[in-house]
Amino acid sequence: MALEEEAEPRQPARLQPMVLDMMGVAELRSYIAALQAEIERVDKEITRKETHRNAADAFFRQP
Image (tube, rainbow, N blue to C red; front, side):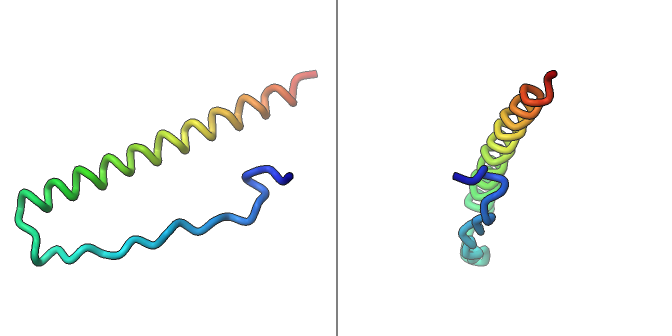
């Protein structure tokens, strides 16, 4: 079984652009908040994976 980083990178699903013309200001602000929440969720997952990887690297570097 190959390591996650060594495997062929999976392409994220392409999001369909929203039609913004039909949205009101409140809806647009809500949409922005949802996007920011998703970005934060992804950032946390990246941090979690980097922390895990760094801990594994440090463990295997020890003499």
